[in-house]
Amino acid sequence: MEPVELTGAGLSPLEAVALGQRRTAVRLSEVARKRMEASAAVVAEVAGRRPVYGRTTGVGANRDVLTSDPEHGARLLGSHSTTGTTSYPKDVVRLGLLIRVNQLAAGGSGLDPAVADAIVGLLNDDDLPDLHRGGAIGTGDLGPLAELGLALGDVVDGTSALPLLSSNALTLAECCLAYVEAGTLINVVPLVGALSHVALRGNAEVYDVRVHEARPQPGQVRVARRMRGLLDGLPLAPARVQDPFGLRAFAQVLGPAVDHSDALGNSVRIDINAAAENPLVAGDTVLHNGNWHAMPIALALDSLRLSLHSVATLSTTRVANLVDPDYTGLSRFLASGAAASSGVMMIEYVAHDALAAVRSAAQPATLGTATLSRGAELHASFAPQAAVLTAQLLDALREVLASELVTAVRAIRLAGLTPDDLAPAAVGPWLADALAALPASLADRSLREDLEIARGLLTQWGDRQVEHPAESG
Image 1 (cartoon, rainbow, N blue to C red):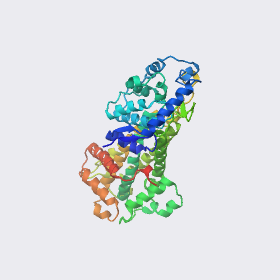
Image 2: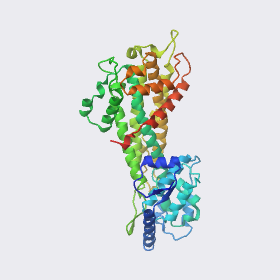
Image 3: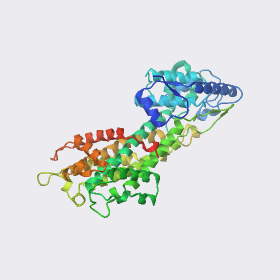
Image 4: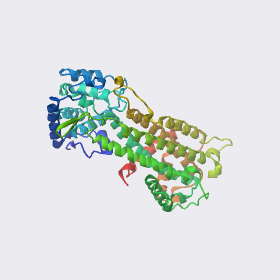
């Protein structure tokens, strides 16, 4: 199989993640190679007649200190490789290197293509350096990229150290992975919600197309369309004229998460294809700028987490409804057997424990402040921290949704409903999947295994979805 060419344009977050996970061989395109060669010649010429940050000057508050020392780059890599002690996962390193090559292919760094070729060599040989967290606050992943520079050896010379560091490539790698995971979970929330709708005998009027034409928020409209596709034709009469919020506001709460997933995908797509370099080689000149600032992706991550917090909160309200006989007509806590049995009572506690983790991780990272390098750097986006929080939130959200799934399926089982009873509604086959996967026993017992199965089922269902929220209209 021929290597995939990296051109500095057209790479999507989903494609980047797929290339990294499959360990697909890559190479620098010839167009990108010529672009890099031209930019390297330009920056060399400009640096001969005026200061160029990081190349003929120090960095940070040392920007006003001129240098022609050939060891300047080596000292820069050595000092900036100061990081914490926690290694990035290998999938993040692999994806981060791929993204950095694609950015370099855009031709704005002034680096020689030999640097990109050296990174490609590490990728294709799966000879990944050990890169560490620490020191990145959304103004460039300086520490881990300095470690990369040291791993590349002599191909990074005294003038090319700083251009290599001028990127948020590792943070963008984590953003890509979070974007894919968020899309997977957002796609399975309607499946879980539809099963809760069945168990609670919800009123499908809330998804009527006329409701959403009256307030055409894009994500909301898409969620309602998805729910109609799952529930149309459901032969169960609704139990209420007006449902509790967990059912009635389902599209209005999940919809913003779809929109914010779109926004994250769009911001990341721009940055993984951008020559977000400082200084930037543009035509026949070099421009000092602030494109290293990761505020767009930091805000997109913060917004997504806040919207997903509401999704998790609404999920726990449905769990509360599902254990309440006033809403299901079933036993308290969906218990079976002897009087005072607890049934799924502890599921609600597990869900709220996970919701607490979601709430903690939802706190906006962009509220952070920083004053660094003798006041030369007075602001930061904290995008790396936002990316870590997003991964933490998504894991906790999966636990919340697993809790709802186990509870909804148990309620349906206790009510004696089968997939055939739901025909011709499209939710039926998903119920059949869940009934086959989850243990049938309704006796009081530990439900930890059920939750683990449900987490795996969410992954399977996500893999079976054709549409990613941010890849379709």
